[in-house]
Image (tube, rainbow, N blue to C red; front, side, top):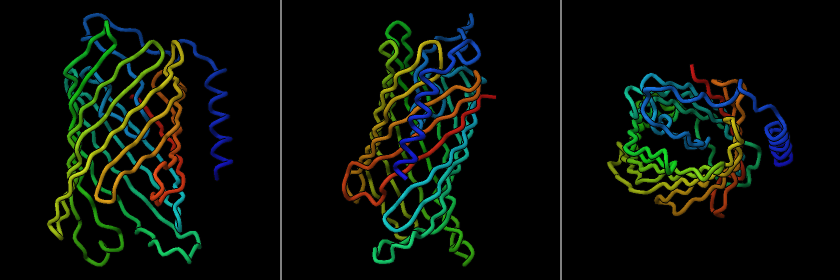
Length: 277
């Protein structure tokens, strides 16, 4: 699996670096009488609810699918997402993630195979309170609320539909250094399990740096996903790239490499299709 992923990354990098970067896939030039906005490269694994400084009427549809190799099972996961700007600098998002799991035959490893399920319903909002074109700097506050759903099997056994919820207030800061785009996405994560009544508090930190090819939306870079929860500290390194097929159609590829030893995942790879209608 590692060989296949390496080959895919090599092909994608070659296509981006030596492919066309003409006007058909370049960024749309600014229009007069619109509020200031700085274009930042948005990471592919943990993305934003809309562009920082989004303008009213902008919208985006994302569809993703990935495969993760775990100790004794393989996970096939994905999501469908719609995001739009309800007003200038105010973004909203609805996302439905799902996962299907299949045992890989390593019966000697006791880790249980998770049940298939729609993970939940994510509702999110984001407001960009600072846009500084001179310094190429943007900042925003966001909030993500996820209603966690039960597995298909338990729903079939007349189990409860909802199992809990996650609340995640977020601070976002992004700054461009010419072609290098940096972004920080961080905040506490509060999880409430309905059945036990337990409330757990953790945190998420996502730091990314991307190199954006001149006059294009193509980029290649790295995303650092760090989470703290009851099981400890989790750290995934996610090399990634994005290719603009047309001015409003992009495709991204991202891999996940665990850097903390206790992670159940060995490696994962995900592709994201991004369409701006």
